Length: 215
Image (cartoon, rainbow, N blue to C red; front, side, top):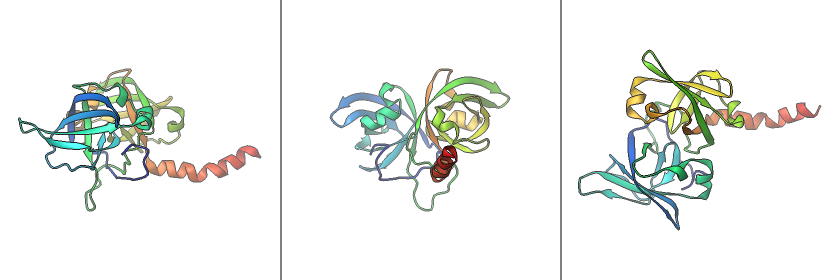
């Protein structure tokens, strides 16, 4: 499943494992990744969010050390909207399995459809939180509000503040320890998924705004 397919799975943005890429190869199926993880009960065809991009499990198993692994393949459309093409062996990545009916929604509704790439502009420790400034592409800036939701590398976050050309995020200690966000540095590229509700509202209002502009 690419991030552009119409078959949807839902996520919450609550990362439940940090995987390690073991192998990367360009194959007929796309850019194929083999990922080491803690999961032992994956099934073929299952959806999994990798740094926020929804991909499909192609193969899975357990190695001779008892560690789980799986493979996915990112197709051209996925590579165009993400930085997966730059991933290499030993990269650490955030993982989340798709929601099941009855699961708690501890984050917010996340589709696993990366909208675009953001750029880390600042990283500062502030008390017990890590403040990260992220520049957003122009189309995504209007979809963010202070204290609203945003997904960065698959992690559901609250916008701490709006800054020029982007957002400031406040990363608590738990999130730093259980995701890769604490490893971000200035200049790093990150996957951004805007709040799906904001995207729907923008779409609904677009005709009215267009009419005002032509008056």
